[in-house]
Length: 305
Length: 233
Image 1 (tube, rainbow over the protein chains, first blue to last red):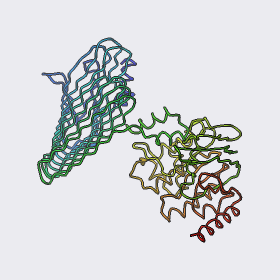
Image 2 (image 1 turned 180 degrees about the horizontal axis):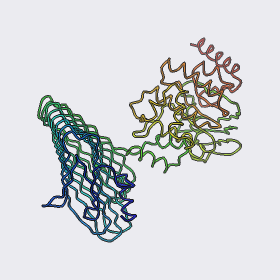
Image 3 (image 1 turned 30 degrees about the horizontal axis):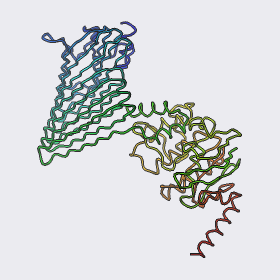
Image 4 (image 1 turned 45 degrees about the vertical axis):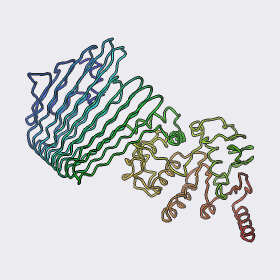
């Protein structure tokens, strides 16, 4: 693995070395390393590019890492990864994609992930997107995540795009059966002339299902962010969507929460707020010795933590 | 140590401070006076949060009137806000570590919370957002000022917005701070018990210093003023 690839692996998956447990590291369109365990199998798809990750029922305290690295300028790929998680599992899945583009051609990774989470299973899914490189070619990522939670299943999604992605459309669709619960914590930072769109649609189909969608965004420079959070309550359920953004420089943010209740016992709430960094927040940190730029950076870092 | 020369602050045709002159190197000075007398404006001018329309702020013999807030902080002035500022995402430990100039790690830095009656283990990772009560925020704010251990610590009405039980411990905090710290304290307060531990008191009224003297002299002056006002009423 080259130094660039190692660096990207650290950025997107916090890995210094090969991880423990199951993993599949995809580098420039091919599988660079893979490990399976007795409980977690990884199988290459035959019809399209991508893998199936099959987790046996009852698998607990195990993890799967599936980072993607692109360091060849001009590489474009669409990858399908399907997760089949049996009942009564408790697993952590670390995904993420990093593009280093030092060339003149656009590099693009479109990852389509689908999750079939069995009854009463718990899944923590972490996905980081990161771009770097000095080339004029763009770094583009369009992740699609489809989640199906069966009865009593719980999934926590921690998704972040912190730097260097020029254009992104992030789509998440979820369906929840009885007593299932979905939490999404999404963070986006855009700068320069970057463009990011995040669309989340959650169907609360089962009685007692709940979702909590929290989106935090910071738009700097001339960047543009669009966030759509939609919850459809189709049964006795609870849904909460929160969209909180900091706008800086000449950034533009469009936040559109949407709630649809199709059942009289559906209880849905949304909150949306966009504002600049409060002057008193800068003042406070300056009284602790930071200059204005350092104070601004600390506030943004905390907000996107 | 601190000298204010001809400080005025005027907004439109409203005079908030009018030619304030002060010189002090006392350990514990309280500023008191009626609401709207310009107390908060005065301490904010010392910290650099407000720029005066006229006059100079001299600190340790140096004119700091043009210095930004952080430069004054580096030179040894700290400030505890009357209404502590809330942050989404930043934690108690982050700000305390910063208050110690990064010289202590988060765990060590949070030990100071014990002095304000909070358990460090419970508060270290709490976000400084609206899940903390006004009283909790206030204690953390005071802990931050104490952590900095500045040559001059400014407190803008530390007792405002806290309950009576918290107030009792607040007095103890200031007594301890006074005993422990080598620096000076300048504190805005209406509370007799805080005024009673001050070396000197500044009595501010209508934007001017009416009286600045030893504690007992100023307390007698205020009592006489209040008596006169009561008779007039």
